[in-house]
Length: 219
Image 1 (tube, rainbow, N blue to C red):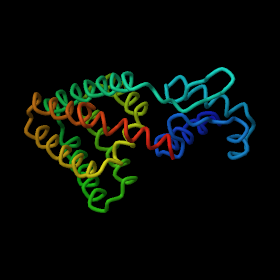
Image 2 (tube, rainbow, N blue to C red; image 1 turned 45 degrees about the vertical axis):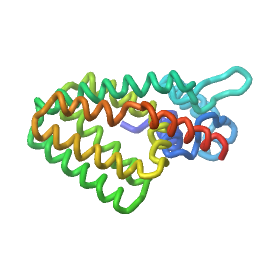
Image 3 (tube, helix red, strand yellow; image 1 turned 135 degrees about the vertical axis):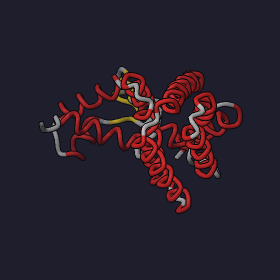
Image 4 (cartoon, helix red, strand yellow; image 1 turned 90 degrees about the vertical axis):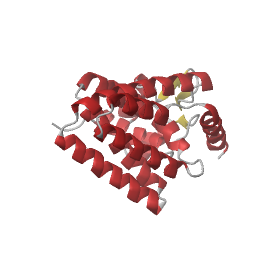
């Protein structure tokens, strides 16, 4: 079945939000987007409404659609919930890991390693997405995997900003390696703890994220 125009546009705009083309606080002008994509304003409006329902965009009176920039407390709350989702998936995956799951984890970890070695933040970002999705699948719980994926997408622009922090790719890779070690060892408690700590934004990481947000807004 062919993808509806609004859905296709929503995916394209979502991708550009996630990759930083559109930054938190940017206005998404219907007329400009319609001209750029060669469509009428109707599918653009529908796409923006879909993005608003997903929490990536806010529809504001007299201003239109704005790329969501939640206040710091709400952002930390979302990361805390994301960390809980990841911990649950890791706990389940450590107990339920199948040979195919193990192969996917090793393959995505190696892809993350190659991206980090190349220093390519964009490639690492995408391989990191694949790595986390492999853990969701390995959990064997489709519902929690769906919820984790949805929030993962919601936080995409902010997770990408974190990679700007110096040495974050290398640190992230080391954390991935430790997570895989725990999963392969079948240690559900350790896997859950390592995944929670990997995703939660606390202490210095909170300060780094807010600094990155401020820099993005100024660019």
